[in-house]
Structure formats: C-alpha cells, structure tokens
Image 1: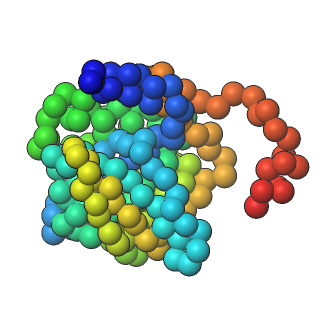
Image 2: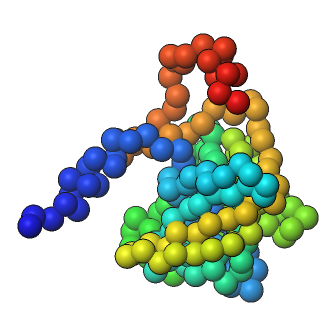
Length: 180
C-alpha cells in the first residue's frame, strides 16, 4: 500500500483554518506555539475545546505539566506573531528558548495566572481536562474558564500553506443570526 502522508498533507493544506497561539506558564515552564488545530467541542456548561500539539515540543510538555493554557485566535494584524511562535517547530527545534517568543506581542496575565494576547480575535483561558496521545501528537481537551473577545478584529487564516484573511461574505447577516 502506498503512503498517504503526502496526499493527506496536501489535502489538509487546502482546508482553511484559523491561526492561534497556545500559551502556558507554571511549574512546567513558559512555552507557546502556533497552531491551526483548534476545535470547539461543546458549548454546554462548562464549554470546552481541543487543541493538538506535537508531542516532542516544549509547548506540549509544558501544557501537560502546567495543567492550564490559553488559546489566542490571531487577527490579521498578528501574522508576524504566528511566524515567531511557529519558527521553532518549522526549524525542527524541540527545546528553543520559549521566553524569547513572548517578547513579541503584548501579553497580559489574567486572574488564573494564564497569559492572554492583547489584540487577539478571541482568547480562551483553559484548564486541561483530558489528553489523548495519537501518533506524533497529543490531543488536549480544555475546559474554558474565561473568554476575551475583540469585536473589531479580522481573523487570520491559513490555507494553501499561506496566511490569508477573509474576503467578502457570501451569506447575509440574517442567516448568521438564525444559526445562534
């Protein structure tokens, strides 16, 4: 059977995804990583979402050890931050000095001691509830403790191996309101 890795990666690259920075700090150290594997799980109380991190990264080890993390969904103006937080993974560095990354952007520590990125489209303060190891990655289920929204921001997207931003809407606002 031929390998599906290359066709799988090519197919996934064509699916537009939001871009976010996962950040954590605590006994396991301060670390962060750019991700596009972010998914809501449930809006039931408490709301939950999941992220996927490569198991060998310092960010994955730190999130697991710290037991909490933030997910900061980036706005179109934060493309350079996405690159900074993605740099160590793309260059194969497993233990880069994560604190240097946090010199970029404006980070605010909230009441739960979690770092949130100022100007992000949305920031979620999460408590680790479950983890699942799957091949090279760890799926981390987070219970959302607080949410910060920036209604003025435009989302940063990643598709076809490039950063993008939203274009024209193809649905009117009436259709959006009916889904809520």
